[in-house]
Image 1 (cartoon, helix red, strand yellow):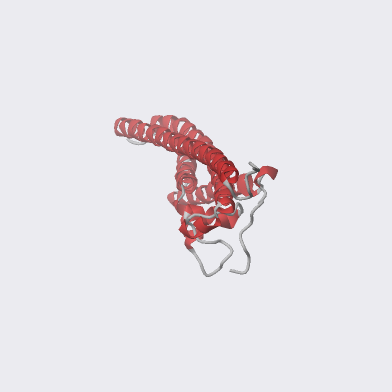
Image 2 (cartoon, rainbow, N blue to C red):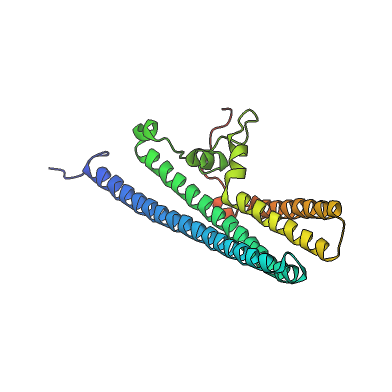
Length: 232
């Protein structure tokens, strides 16, 4: 009597189970790594805001004692420069963490594609995407497709991100430094306001362009292997 296992028999089921176990293990690993990424991002933001709060409290005390005189200006400018430096490095690190988070999302989308390959009947039950391109990542993140001009969700989401929020704060610090420098040279109040506003815009634009450039290019490992269907 032949003992050969027919196609689709227990042998195939065992192989599929092993594949599912491997995919699930990697999925949990990426999920844990993504959690660590979030934790570091929140820690970085907390450190920056703590330094900023401490600096403002210290400057308030000096201002009460010196009445915004020369001593206050000489202390405020270097202190705010330090805070601005911490802010710039924090935004840079948050941008890198966002790139890492995008990588983990792409990895989980690929694993989800593997689940669907093994069991296509499960596809209707996934609300996240099995595609590893930008559109699939946005779907998994719950953000509207940026390719559709009628959908503004993705563009509204950008100012809500941590790097964007901290960029505005850092730009405001830059404007404050410019105002203090102008005040030190006894420039008229209107000119002080213009200098602060111009510096705010300059810092904001430079940092926004820098952040966009840093995330514009994806490494070869993130090139789509299972792209989303077009023509939606």
